[in-house]
Amino acid sequence: MPQPSDLVIETRALTKRYGDAIIAVDDLALRVRRGEVYGFLGPNGAGKTTTLRMLLGLVRPTSGEAAVLGAAPGSPDGLARIGALVEAPAFYPYLSGRDNLRVLAGHAGVSEDRVEAVLSEVRLSDRADDRSATYSLGMKQRLGVAAALLKDPELLILDEPTNGLDPAGMAEMREFMRSLGEGGRTLVLSSHLMGEVEQVCDRVGVIRDGSLVAEGTVEQLRGRAGLRVRAEPLAEAARVVGAIPTVDEVTSVDGVLDVAVDTAQAPAINRALVEAGIAVSALYPQQASLEDVFLELTANGGQRP
Image (cartoon, rainbow, N blue to C red):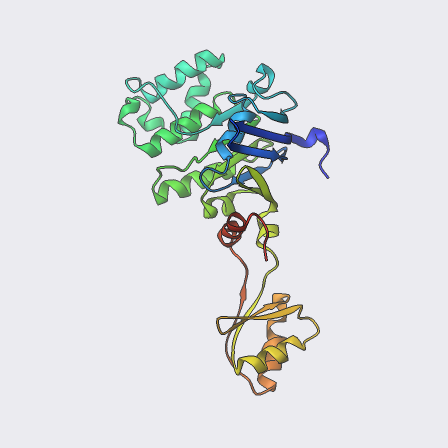
């Protein structure tokens, strides 16, 4: 179990209500460890952005507690060590990208040297003198990330950072986010893109209707790998495979057997079927994708079958 000093974010029973009818965040218990890339997943309207805004002190919770970098959300000590991009970034349209960052650096008490450093880091140096009004949506996202990095923060919170990027830009941003999570910096990534989270994040939390319904590493959420077998006759194949001591469970789905077993047992299972006179047309490893798990969790309130 992580010690309190290892936790960058910790919430207890964090709740946000709007009137009597709307519960945006409900009894949320979130624990983000120092130095990890934490994926915060949920469908639109699940409460992701409201949670992030509470952690930044932009929204006051109805009840519950939260600590961010050991301080209350919104406290000067905490905010000095946090960089955030929440919702669409907004800039002065008639200022250049560089001058927008200079304005923000002045407000934050940050040296102008950081402006050039972050422009280089997000690969905007070649367009830094152009007015931000001429930037594409993807370039504005990158400028928003640059603004979040100005203070060289310990904790970086990014809300849908690949919004508006083309496939090449998304791949570049994924690589960039992986680098952000190195060197002791903690990154919280809110997203609905499963591939993005699967490739970048160390741990994942899934929120539905304001409540955390699952949390763990990507591999933990995806569950144990197994084998899928296509063979005839199917009923006899199920009987033979089910009798193998290393097999935990066999189920038939749409004319194919799903076998809960270590994938290293594939040769032994194939041999047993062939020796029993069963025709095997396919045998391959299979595991639920993060997208499958996400849809399952958000469809039925977190109870995986």
